[in-house]
Length: 217
Ligand code: BG6
Ligand code: MG
Image (cartoon, rainbow, N blue to C red):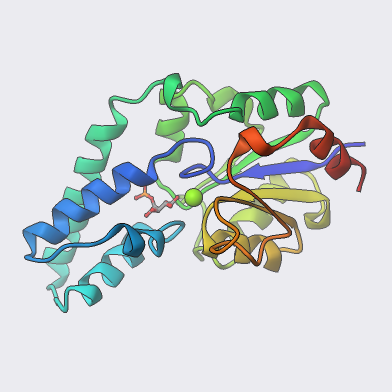
């Protein structure tokens, strides 16, 4: 018996949310305002373009298309300077335990991320080869909460959506998994991710016995 396990990247496998936040904060500050950690929560799982639109809204700013593109490139350069420092030490606690278990039990393992930097990050933390399929921001036309990213991942794993399980830390991502008719596992707080089928604070709370139950469903 085997299933497809689809992992979001940012906030699930690695805590890159803090680097996204630093880069967006720098940009907002340049434009003369600030963004809070609570606001950053709303940017999780949201595409780069959409994130900048939301941030400009918060600051009541409008930019020309050229300026918009300039700031987006600048944000990504800043973000990539943080990524350049990453190594396997940044993999979140007990993520390797679960990935190893899924490999041992021959489950399908895929990545389903909104990030266009996903492949680069997986290489930096030495996890690239763990994934049989990688679907990221370069491969989709519709961003989360649209289920496209997860449906493509299921297809690449040769699994029916209903045989897939998604690990997600964002509100939009959990909604996307639910719309894809997959089992959604929220990584974070129950307050934020109440619409997920299961919620765990992080992978240290996930036992292999729970994974076994998911495999049997
Ligand atoms: C998501 C992050 O995984 O990827 C968002 O949660 C980010 O914060 C989005 O904006 C796009 O990432 P990138 O790396 O293409 O800018
Ligand atoms: Mg995420």
